[in-house]
Every structure is written in structure tokens, then in C-alpha cells.
Image 1 (cartoon, helix red, strand yellow):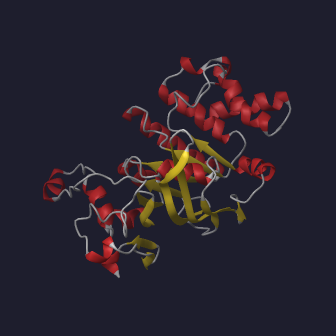
Image 2: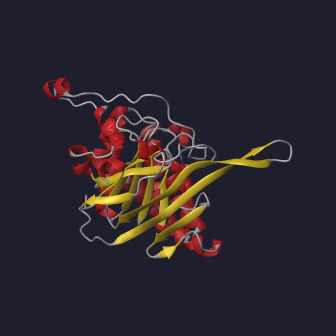
Image 3: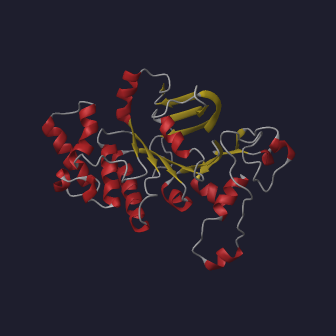
Length: 329
């Protein structure tokens, strides 16, 4: 894991918005928008892992997909090595795709059941016209070894593998075209706990070996703490807090981060007994009609009048520690 040694930005996200239209009636009238991602900005540095956490439905996976242009963003910029992906023509974007890949959440749904493992991992090489047929075969065998699978499995089908093995196949497919940036979309949430650690360790080893940069999306804070250099906390389409891993765990500033962290169990009974759980009242509002002002104001234990009227600025309050909260203004 690098401590942002290079401090060279690989990905810059600026005011990214991803709204999905809500259509009604026979004429499919546009009546509203689901504001899945609502104006977020952050950078990802070369060689680091940025963790993106938040509860289900807060827009984490949509953010990952919008960065890779699997969804066309409604607004904002995504700069990859200084080039704006949002404004690229399809041909240019296709060439850029070699540099960016994704590991999907569900290893059961993301592999084509009619294709052999060799075809699944080799498909990106064919799409980008990389190497001869023999070279592609060699590369697939090499990748299977890299992710800890037997190269002789090349002609087997996905149903012959366990969940953990399938996720390794997904990792091999993401590595096929030698990317520099990988979005890991909750890559372990569908796996047994015993297998989760193996996949996390594999991802860390690969990062070291190939100099990869990760956006690691998850809702399990203990996993994110293990793998990430910096962590962004997301709630209802907005980033509430962004800082280094240790700073977030020792000094969470946003009330939402504090509530999330209070729910993470600590394996020390003495510490656990002294801790106070912060229970949030109410439900998450709908992204079709988020609250005016701060998106968290309807559930925040420290809410003030200004929170319900004006949206707080996302500001840096100490070195590298960004928070969107009126408490610190």
C-alpha cells in the first residue's frame, strides 16, 4: 500500500452528477429525477486505494460506473490522466477502456455461463486486438496463475467453480488488458467471510505487483479500513467526509461518519463496553426528493437551523481532511 507517495493524480472527479429520469404515463412524461449522485468531487492518486463507503442505495456503485462511463453522467467532469472521459467520442473512449477496468459485485451474475473461463478472461484481449491467438492463450494461462487458479481450468465453465474462485476469474478478466485503474464494486460482499480475506489479500498483492490504483466500494467499514489509504463517506448522493484511513477512524468529524463508525464492533470487550452506539432516527430520504440544505439534516443528532436551509460547503478543515458540515463553520 502506498502512502500517496507520488501524489500524482490519476483520476479527478469534479462535480459529478448522475440523475436517472422518472417517467410516467403512456407518453412517458419526465416527472422527476432520481439524484443517485448529486455533485461530488474527489481525486484518486496513482498507486493508492480510495475506499468509498456508505449504506445501501447511497450512490456508491453508481459513482463507480459513472467514472468508467458505463453510465453517461448527467453533469460534471471525470479526468483520467488529465483527459475528460465525459466529453470523449466513443472511439477514443474505447481505446481508454484498456486503462480502466471493473471487478463486479456478484461473481455469479457477472460471468457468462455459456463461455469457458479461457474465453471470459481472453475476451478483453480480443476486443482490443491484443496479440495473436497463441499469445492470448498464454496470457490467459498466466493470469489464472496470478490470481491463484490452476491454468488447466481454462476450458471449464463458471458453474464448476465456487464463489471465491469465480471472483478470482473476475479479477483475472479485469487484469487482462493491463489496466492502471480498477473500480472494485463491493467485490467481496457476495462471498463467505472465510473467502473475503483471501480476495482482499489477493487485491493487495496485485496492487503491489502491477502498480494498480483502486476505487474500492464497500459498506463494510472494517474491510475498507484494512485495504484503503483514504476513505470517502457517502450519504444520499453526496460525499460527507474524505480523509486518510487512520484520521477517519480516530477523528471522524461528520455526524454521519461518527454514527457509522459507532456501529463497527471492536474485538476488545473493555473498549466495547465504554463505547456509545449512535442510533440514527428515521429512514434515508428518497433520492427523488432529497432534503433541502444538508442531505443528512433529517436524521442528524446535531442538526441546526442552517442545516435545513443551506447546503454545507465541502471544505478542507485540516490537511487532507475534507468535511461537508455546518458544525465547523
